[in-house]
Image (cartoon, rainbow, N blue to C red; front, top):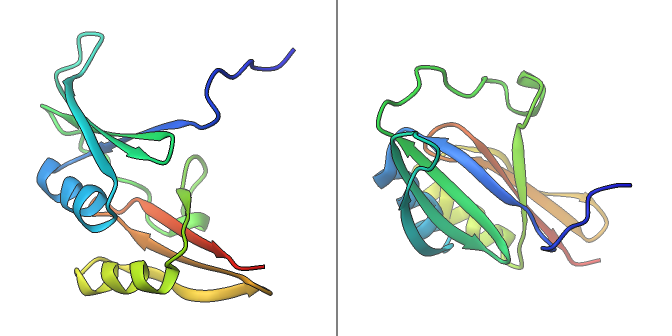
Length: 137
């Protein structure tokens, strides 16, 4: 049977500890379009900051009571489950340098992984990994 998609992309929810820091990273540094702030649904208390990444929606969720647990350390190999998400970009070196210059951790510096395809991986303010891929093949 399979899922019958009505949108050609996914939406991603990221629980954050600090709205100001997360918006500075995703909206101001990465340049995602901030489209709305909405109250959390289903009886949860907090705010969802909604940002567009192409046709995907990145939902930064700031709960009134921040959970104690943090992302597992060690990047991709540190734990099972969702470990990173990928953005396909045209300015890999520029955005990786901007993230580094802003004081965020660059876990994998821009490097070619196969002919014409380069990646880098960075951390957001809460330690979540974001991968940038540039495909010039």
